[in-house]
Every structure is written in C-alpha cells, then in structure tokens.
Image (cartoon, rainbow, N blue to C red):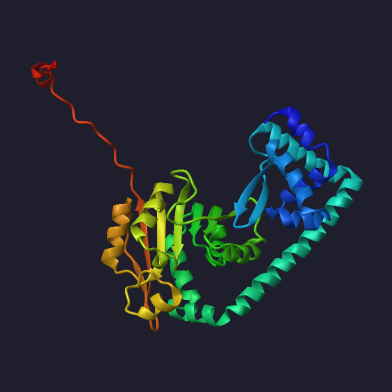
Length: 338
C-alpha cells in the first residue's frame, strides 16, 4: 500500500461514503449505486480507484460484482488500519459526514429488506420442492442437534460450509466458529444465504461462489469443513473430499451429513442426485483415501430415508522420502561414454 494513491482515493466524498458502507457489509456494485443515487458506471469507476489503492476488494459472483473493504481499524497493513480508523473518527466528529453516513445506512437497510423479500419469494416459488426434500432428508431439528453433539464443546475455528444453500448451517454454527466461509455454486442460493446471514458481523462470515471440485482456497485454510446434504450431488465424491482435505489444516475436522445408501432412483431422476446415499464402508474408504482418519458415524433413521453423520480428522500429509544409495553402490557404478 502506498500513501499517494491512498490519499487520492480518499479525496472524493463518494468514495468516503463507499468505504463507510463497506465497513458494515459486502455489497454489490449495483446496490452501492442504489444507495448512492449514482449510475452504475460512475460507481464502478470509484470502485476501481478504491481497489487500485488497496482499500477495497472486488469479487465476481455470476454476473454480479461484489465489493468488500480491504482495511480494518486493527489489522494489517498499518497504513490501511490508519485509514479505516480515520474514517471512523470522521463519522463520529464531523456532523455533516455523520449525517450523510446515517442516511446511507438507512438506504442500506432498505436493500436488506428487499433481500429478505426476494428470499421469501424464492422460497414461495419452490415451496413444494423444498418440502419434499426436507421430508426425504429428515427433520432439521434432530439432524442439527446430532451434528452439534458430534462437535461437542470444541470450537470450530475457521469453518468452511461447502454447498451452503440457504445458509442454514452457517447460521447455526456461526457461534461455535471463529469465522465462517459459506460457499455455493449457485448465485441464486447465495443471494438467499446472504439475506439469512446479513445480521452476522461483516467480518464473521464470507459468502463465495465456487465449485466443490476445485475449491478456491490455498492449502490448509480451514480448521473445520462441513458438507451438509451436498456430497450426493458429486459425480466423483473422492475428488471432492480430496479437495476438502487439501484445504483442511492438520488435525482439523471434516463432517459429512448425508443420506445412508438407499434405492430411491427417483431422487436421481427428479432431484439430480448423482449418488444414492453412502454406505459406512464406502464413506470410510473415501475419507481415508482423501487423508482423513474416520471416526464412528451417527445414524438418524427416518421415514423413508436414514441420515448419517460421518466425521474425521485430517492426518499429517505424508512425507516424501528419497531412498539412499549406499556409498559402495555409488563407487561400483561406472559412467558409460558413447
């Protein structure tokens, strides 16, 4: 981070307002335009300046571009932390700026209400499908209680919720985690999850679009990885669990909540299930091959299907050893010249 582009970025009132909005939550560029009362191209130009200065970060999700703050009052780099603190003090001590920020947050609240309404409309239009799926997967309460019990009192640390869907599990586990990353391939589902999770602190949860066969994270990024009614959509569960192992820290935990093996072929035909559940032996093999030490499973019989909870711990990555060649063998070798 350099001082000249940083000060230039903060020299324009609209960009100051954008930074104060981003201090509260991640926002799409279109949503920023709505709050600020400016055209989207104009807001995009402001966004570029903020990102080039290192004050904000962009993230593409489908056709939407989301923006989040890259600086906080108590974080690295120090220059960014100082900028965040300056903006916070300015809102507190500058009456005109404070009034402007208050009005912006009022507009932001209207956006949040619109998100809630959109989520409700989405659920209403898919009510029959959601009800069917919930009945097939069992009641939420017993499954969620059993999952919490399997974690015990252990803190989840950095949690990755793969296939977060509506964000239900991310919301349930947020209090046990230091940070939650909720990932889903569907932009529509992420919009629903964002509405559900918007009451959580902005630095507590991150929502990302991504594919579980190629997780967009560096190795050893998470302490806990969760697959809740997701793995049966995988054409190759081994690849998916291998990716989970790659991003799980040594000693970290994985939890897979899914259906026990069944013969309901209609789920494959009507609901795009690639796998008709999993047997204990199959899941244990998958976890072991991925690099996890599997633990005893939990079974929750239902009508008509049974839900299982499989857990495991990340094993140390195997060390690659090169066999030593005895000195006598080296001496015996002769170099053959052409």
